[in-house]
Length: 139
Image (cartoon, rainbow, N blue to C red; front, side, top):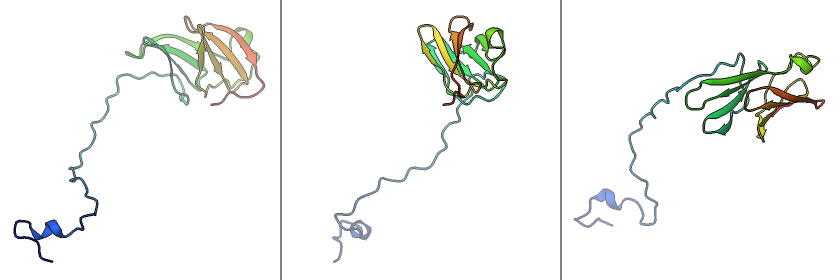
């Protein structure tokens, strides 16, 4: 079949039922995200940060640290170290934190490799109590 004179030959080359593809857009690279701030916690951070509210977040690391920070600026409000102070002195040396903490009623509950669950005040970072679970706290 010949194409009518008002249509170019390429317009009739595909069957009427064939799907049409949108016009190809030129590929452009997405703009690179800028780093707003960094928070150094002494070792790797495997767990996701936990946001308490608009002005406070918690991050945990393998350096046995929990840090409360301002999500907008990265400014540290307080840090807590678990596994080697006060009534925690008899726990295993490795109290690395790999799991995200859970927060309820002003306490952050943090599990660690030393087999303990720690209740940490979200106001000042003080360790309120420690519970021996018998197994490493992971994910």
